[in-house]
Image (tube, rainbow over all chains, first blue to last red; front, side):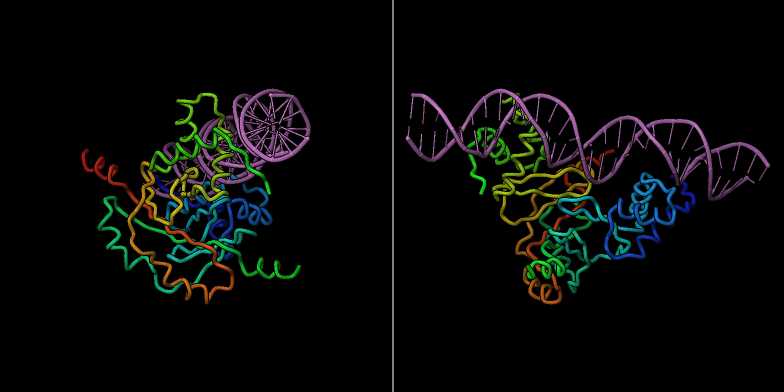
Length: 134
Length: 134
DNA sequence: TTAATAATAGTAATTGTTATCAATATTGTG
DNA sequence: CACAATATTGATAACAATTACTATTATTAA
C-alpha cells in the first residue's frame, strides 16, 4: 500500500519511548526529544506515534480524563492510573483473569471480539505517602 | 457543600439518557433534546452530564478514539466498542473475572486500587453482516 | 543523478470540552 | 406573597488535544 521510508525522527521517537517507563503523552515525548533536537515538530511526533501504533510497534493507552499515553511494550499487560498525579504505571496481575472466560463471553455475544483491556484506577504510592504527612 | 437546585434541563438530560441504550455522546444527547427543546445550550448539556456523573446518577465511559459516552446504568457491567461504526453496546459477561483475583493483585501493588474497568473492542454484529455482503 | 514520492517543519484548522458572564429560575425565610 | 441569596441557564469565548495542509527536504529505487 503505502511504501514506508526511513525517517530519523521516527527512530528518535521510538527510541525515546523505549528508554522510559512512564507511559508519556505525545507532548511529553515532544518535550524530551526537543532537548537534543530542537527542530522537531509537534505534528511529526503525533504523526509518527500514530504510524507506530498502526505498525504495531508501540501501544496507545486511553485514560479517563487526560490525553492519550504511549507504551513501547506491546505485550498485553496491565496499567494503573493515579487520579491525583495522573501517573501511569505497569501492574503485576499474573495470569489474565478474562482470558479463560473469553470463550463463554464470546459465545453469547454476536459481534467479533478482537481484544479487551483492563485498567485500574486509584491513588499511587507516592500520592498516598504525600497525603499521610500533612 | 454546594446546595443543588432543581433544573428542568438536568431532568431532561437524565430522562433522555434513561430512554436509550446506545450510550450517547454529549453531542448526541444535545441533538436529541434539541428536537423538543431547541433553546437548550450545548454547555448546559456538558455541565449537567458532568454533574450527574459527580452525583453518581450516570456513568461516563472513555473509549479509545472518540468522545466520551454516557450510560444511565451505573451498575457495574461491560461494554463493547465497535471500531468500525463506533457503536457501544452492553455485554453479558457473567460474574466479574477480575474481582476474585483482586486481593492477590492488590497485595503486590503499593498504590490503592479504587476501581477497575474492562472494555472489549472489535466489530459489531451489524458491521460484520454489512461486510460479508459485498 | 535523477525521478518519484514519503516525510518534514511550521502553521492553520478542527474537535471536544470547559470557562465566563449577564440574565433567569429556584428556594428558603420573613 | 415578597424578596434576598444563589444555583442554573444560554450564548459565546477560550482552551487543550489532535489532525490537516503545504511548500520544502530526505529517502529510495532505477
